[in-house]
Length: 158
Image (cartoon, rainbow, N blue to C red; front, top):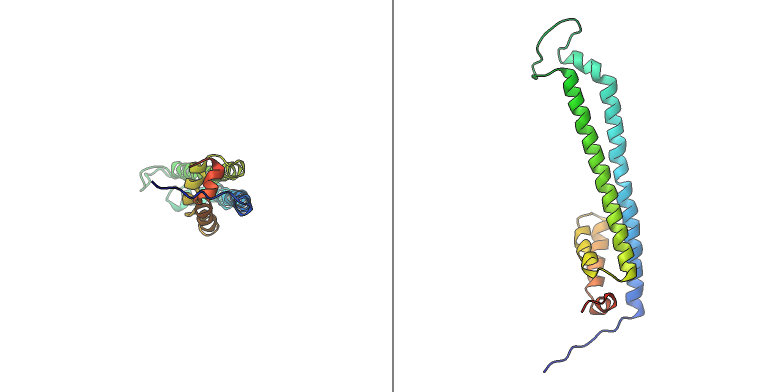
């Protein structure tokens, strides 16, 4: 015959959850700002490809008015088009990942504030540990706070 000691939620728990929620909103902004350097480097790369494309064609042996096969198995213009496509794909993917992670963190902040989806918020805390350095700190505190029995009670998890 055993009994369980119940920890009652207190003001400290609600204060910590409020701070975690705000921290997730801030980290969402940081994640969104993380996509800006990739966007800028993609734009700069596209501009470089556009500017130096003809010079690169000549450097690769494509002399205007002289027929000949390229040592790379294709025309320099086709290679430049492939580079441009690769650069665009990488840029769009990086910006999409930044936006999706920012949206994810905002959802977690809202759910912590509403005291719902405990498992989702808890697992996100583990994933945030990979976002060094700010995400690691926020992730550790998220795990510690959400692991408390009194906080689990606030979320309705028992």
